[in-house]
Image 1 (spheres, rainbow, N blue to C red):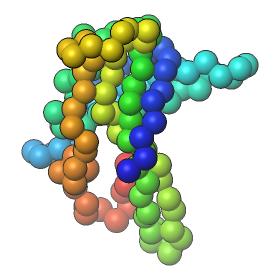
Image 2 (image 1 turned 45 degrees about the vertical axis):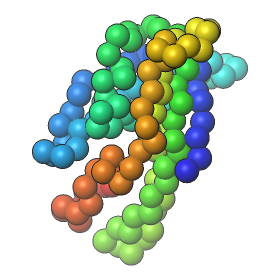
Image 3 (image 1 turned 180 degrees about the vertical axis):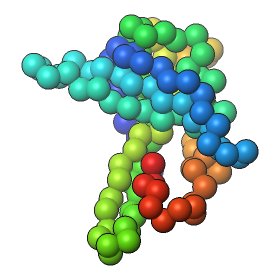
Length: 126
């Protein structure tokens, strides 16, 4: 699984969402300065990783390490679409010296961290 680190300012920290009894998520939006058009990048934290966002606030400068995930989905019309998502794995304050406790991280995601497959065929896979 590919991994990237995004550095920027927290634009928004979403509320914890219980999707099912076995799956929960929380979204973080990071604004990354990029020339004239800043990029607003959503990163999804799932399961136990949701708590990594506790203690951070909108406006904080952070570095977030994410796993890049891609999924294939076929619609009722037979058209196949591909989706890309970023799964947050670690977050730390930008410019902070690495330490054994200053950064907040979790183990690599597993299949249990992904949302359940199934449900209504009209539902988009995200």
